Image (cartoon, rainbow, N blue to C red; front, top):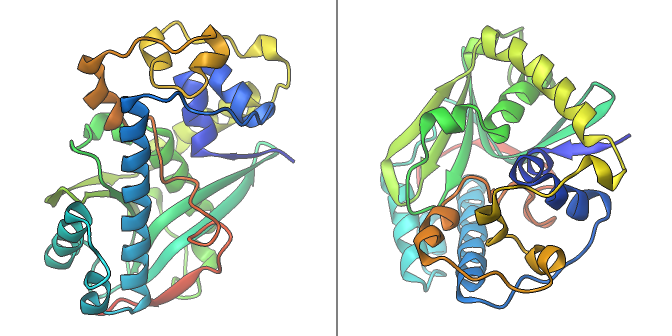
Length: 280
């Protein structure tokens, strides 16, 4: 059975050929040596570190103990922002860094969620962002991440011991919390209408992603995407000239989705953790 996460969908929408090379042929291709890719790598590293620190906070490690281990200015400030503007509800059961899956359209769909809060009448899915700009709510609502996570929660909510009974889609909410803009989280409400659309959406994506033939995955016509793709030298046999005017846009783009396939020791392969969330 094929397995898809939001990353596969995201890569396919970014460039079908990128999806083919990465997820079907499973080619490990080095990123070009360039200032832009160095910045992307550094942003990736800091984001993963921040996710790990927040997971430890939710697990019960004290804020004082964690902050003493942080020596980078950005990470230090992000943790201070989280302590001050903690978006997780006090009266909820919190699951941290969990993997949720469901079989639909003969595909195993998988989601890696930073945190999930179970309230008596609502489920909130949290995702931590460290980008330098806040995302567009309309773009985020239609993103593979939001759609898949809310869809998977509809299939899985009864599997959590602390949440009983059936729920409707409008009791599910996706929350994007930005470490650089801690007082302005984005709340996206799911709905029955969106759920019905997603039933068709994921069936359609399953059909598009199930082929193994290269001919079904043409290279994108948006060459600006190629400038920030690690496969650019595979497709063009040379490093494309960088456009500094596009750098900020791509560094902050939701398309990169750095944290949706976390390291095995952080989330995907670790045991799901659940505890009451306590004040720091």
